Image (cartoon, rainbow, N blue to C red):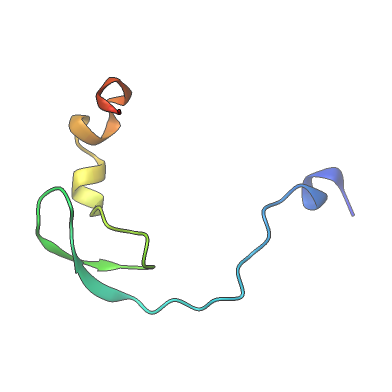
Length: 56
């Protein structure tokens, strides 16, 4: 086994169900792949999402 194989993050045994959720930024409904995905892909492409100086 290579070093890169040893250092990989383990894969989860959980199977998540894709379900509709409301984006926390725009409030539009989108298909979320897992419970922690709460921002839609459109909002993730905005400067507001990508600007690290706004993070607090």
